Image (cartoon, rainbow, N blue to C red; front, side):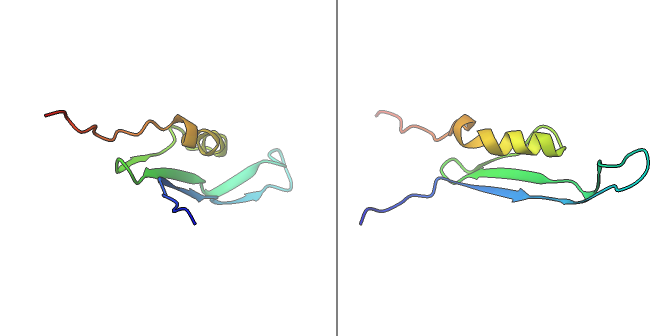
Length: 79
């Protein structure tokens, strides 16, 4: 069996919201706690979070972070 290496951890909190049923804002979400996410690279010890705070920003971040993260591991210097 070959060994697996975990390179990063993606944490996602889906938040707490309810759909408004009546009135002018019917169908919209009223957020008590906005969704949030963070990616931790276990190789270079960095943490990345999305730029925005809305559900759309979180969804785009989660979809792209694994391919867009550039690891900042220090390369060994030649002697």
